[in-house]
Image 1 (tube, one colour):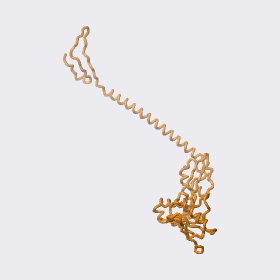
Image 2 (image 1 turned 30 degrees about the horizontal axis):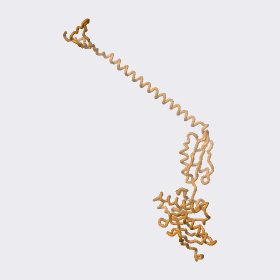
Image 3 (image 1 turned 30 degrees about the vertical axis):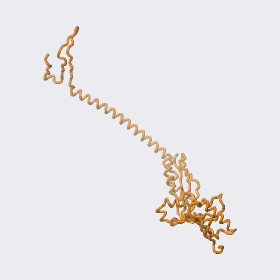
Image 4 (image 1 turned 120 degrees about the vertical axis):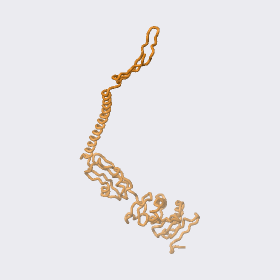
Length: 307
């Protein structure tokens, strides 16, 4: 059998003949198989492309519809939130401010930055609380919204434990941090920590505050309520070489303690005061408790009382 021929007018059709020979079985004859491939026309190809494009456009259209729906819901929600925030029902009608010792109510109101009639839901409590702590007397603050129309403020004030002479006189809190320049009324009755200069504090702030904390701890031990009554102090002095000294309010006597073992040294001071025989501790000029020998103490008295 000869190979198939393709005519000029049949270029769109290709016929492939496989199996050139005939195979005879016992009872039947197997004929040749033909595979026919037809080249698609331009119209059919274009229709397929348009159909695929249509499917993609349908998917894109659905996605756009979902996005438009989400945007519409978000916009509607935003409008609802704006309406609620601006509602007169949630306008500030009360500023609840507790009484404070060192900060006036007018100062608190000024630091709040919130006025009667402002939208309560637009107030940021954390930001308002942070603004309150800019006042030197306010250690911490808490602000909360009590719906529908109240802004409540809780303030914790600092406690001045002593003053420190660092160029000017500053109030010290319990952590040894200077927090404001002291007025005469604020400094009245508070002991003074001396020996740290302004330049030293600026250059070594952490170390200086540690020195102040040690001085405050010494003051606390000296003025312990369950301890013996001791002479009033006017000053706690620290020297980088010799350590801590106490200056008595009456008479200006100096008690040199040095460093460490403060409880034992204060107990020896108590024995010295008790041994004055009824005389005032104001007769003491210098008491040396910073020496190496615990059983010997050098005491200098005022000249009129010296023996």
